[in-house]
Amino acid sequence: MTKKTFLITGGCRSGKSRHALKLGNLFPGRRVYLASAEPLDEEMEERIKKHQIERGTDWITIEEALDPSSVLKNETAKASVLILDCLTLWISNMMMKDLNRESILKKVDELMDECKRFQGTVILITNEVGAGIVPDNELSRSFRDIAGETNQKVAFKFDEVVHMVSGIPVTIKSESPQAPSEAKDSPHEFSQEKKQGLYEAIYKRRDVRHFISRPVAPEVLGRVLDAAHHAGSVGFMQPWNFLVIDDENVKKKVARNFKKASDEASEKFSGEKQELYKSLKLEGITEASVNICITCDSKRFGPNVLGRDTIKETDLFSTCCAVQNFWLAARAEGLAVGWVSILSQKQLKKDLGIPEHVFPVAYLCLGHTEEFYEKPMLESAGWANRLPLRDLIFYNKWEGDPIGPSIPLPGPVL
Ligand SMILES: Cc1cc2nc3c(=O)[nH]c(=O)nc-3n(C[C@H](O)[C@H](O)[C@H](O)COP(=O)(O)O)c2cc1C
Image 1 (cartoon, rainbow, N blue to C red):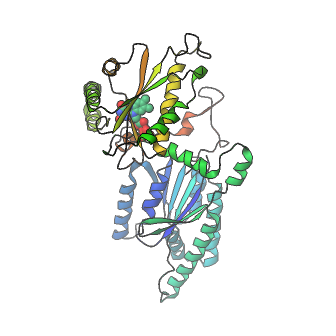
Image 2: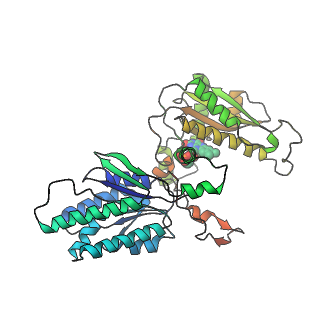
Image 3: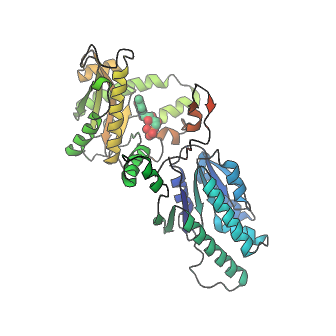
């Protein structure tokens, strides 16, 4: 995982903050929003409140009008992504404290050093203030000049620079400084572009429950199934089968199975949690143009399968690898997948005529969707949040030392 530095520039109300949040939301873990705005009057107070509501509870807001470097220093081991909103307000705050051009630019250099040291991804927001007519007073001209010089400094040092024009992000600089050194790591490494594609499939894969009626092209389905078939399996057992279901009557049977199982499951919760459960859409069986049931035949090449003596469930593990391949390949093809496990296995096997010794591992809805959710639907619905990766890694022993800075975990490489 590599960290990145982004500068987002643009005019007033060009969509800078929205784009920064969209980008920042791609990074799991602790997200920090560093605001340089001070609520000096009612209008500003309103604006700040509006921005806080937009960010929701996923972001920790820290207000610091004059010394953002100190916040970066403090947060470096903790945050996976930090947005600083915004450079131009920070400059104006410093000017209001009578700092001169040299002192301000020195502070900008210090901030650049902190951004470099920061372990996570940094997203700075700034304004393009120099494009209009020449301001009629010296203070405004000086502000315009310092802001311009600052933007140049940052844009030169940062990896990616995006210019927001009427809400549309236009990338004006894109580079990965890590690429040359990474390339030396292994002669077998994929090119930057290919890696990007793989990571994009991983991070943009979503479990989707909303489908549109557009059919899945057979040749695309073929590619996705072949990707699934290229998963690893214990002793090369390849225990999977793929039941492709497009008969509406069969889908309806499975949908009835889901409804019954889901009603029963909702009874396990009570109060608000139960209400929330009932409001969730947890399947798209009849909407999706195709359903695929991926099964595991525990007797394939049996009874002695190389590597399966000690852990019998490795046949199921192998099938899950096929499911994940299927899910990722589908995402790369622009197809949505929704896994439905809230089903009676017994009923499903009966409805699909699956033999006794074969286990239906995954019932998947496959089709086109209007949009892929930006984050897990259960996260948006307030059911659960992604756990911090840092808390899930131990060194050498279960619950051993917490991981140190030697493994940087800055978030998705996108
Ligand atoms: C084994 C398994 C079973 C799942 N079963 C269901 C299900 O019955 N209904 C549902 O809506 N989502 C189901 N999901 C999807 C998860 O809710 C989803 O993967 C999780 O919330 C994370 O979201 P994401 O996949 O979009 O990253 C299942 C996922 C897995 C891996």
